[in-house]
Image 1: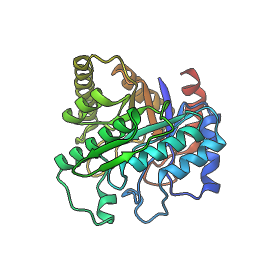
Image 2: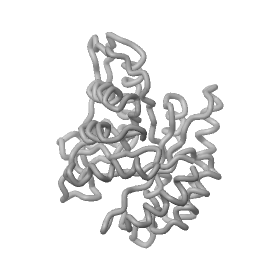
Image 3: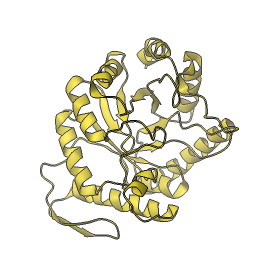
Length: 291
């Protein structure tokens, strides 16, 4: 099992920088951030987009993977995202991890874009991802889509080392992730209880495995975001870093389901992700160090 930490972009860089460095120093395998204009979990907080933060993080780390969880079509054009990925691949010396997904709808709302149905949002995401694949695999790319188009888009330098990690929870998206992604990212299903969440994850794994086999592709990395647990009686699910014992329990169950990577969050003094940095340090010593 590999382990990662998500660091939100609500802090100024002077305060965030030590956290990115600490994730590497503590032995974690990767570090991530959300990619939003505004995040609903902290709607009144300062916020910055992911790509400049990851560029800065690349300069103060040397080993860990650095990624987006996730970039989405809610405010990004695939060609601009591709160019950002090229820059981050270079700045990180090949450590960038491009996580993409449908994303929440708040960013689109802020930009005054039309409200889309769930199906349309998934269609738009797949169009973005298909365009990213075309840009990665070709040059002088011309595509005309419903949401995104390019005309003779140059793609030099080639994007060689950045994996495309596709977020998926539902059956249609899981099959799509298995066909096109270099890895799979999931927050698990939207359900009412923790038991249903684990059961739903097992079903998702089976769907993904079946789709991988049908596409003739080999095993791919599988990233589980642990802290999107279900709402129970109106309260958030338990934070993975609430204790080392609970983190070990979550990691063990995720491993049994075949997940290769587990991603939690840097503890915060209050919601969301309330916790103690001492627990994070304990997990790093006693769990992450064992791999």
